[in-house]
Image (cartoon, rainbow, N blue to C red):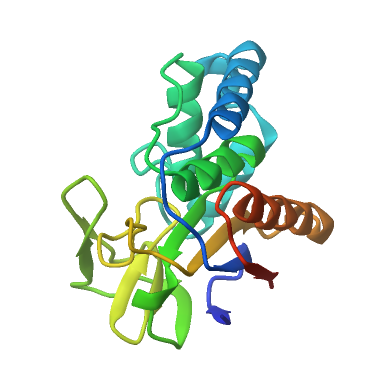
Length: 213
């Protein structure tokens, strides 16, 4: 699924998966998440996390678009702060959990969407005045001036918080994962991250087919 990028400071990778089964994370995925969280807790404190290269790069990406990353934290930094505080990741469902795992490993925001609810064309752009959506687990999210994924029906995602409209539910069978990497990240690093997500969607999400772009 092609995404047009109108924000040059962002490098996108997309992973599509077909035939997934949305269910609680199995023991092996839960163990992998637990071990990764433990490693991040040993690696960082809240103070040192702010100086980590991926966190600095994502923050710079936000500042380039005129956003204060301390006021509106990138989703990856919010997850990492939670992990470093010893709270671990939320366990939602296998698809969401493996995507969040990838985000804390790389330090980049990831988004995960039910592909059946998307209506191409899709573009990553600035939010327009008056645009908003109901975000997952929280209040309405105002999008003016903020990085926004939008399809033919309007905005549905961002590297900060995603919408209820396209979120992963038990009925999802085909999914789209978007990696929002800073533009300066080498292509090979982004490709490795995308490969990892595709592999996990097959192993832990039971996907019958995956493809990357």
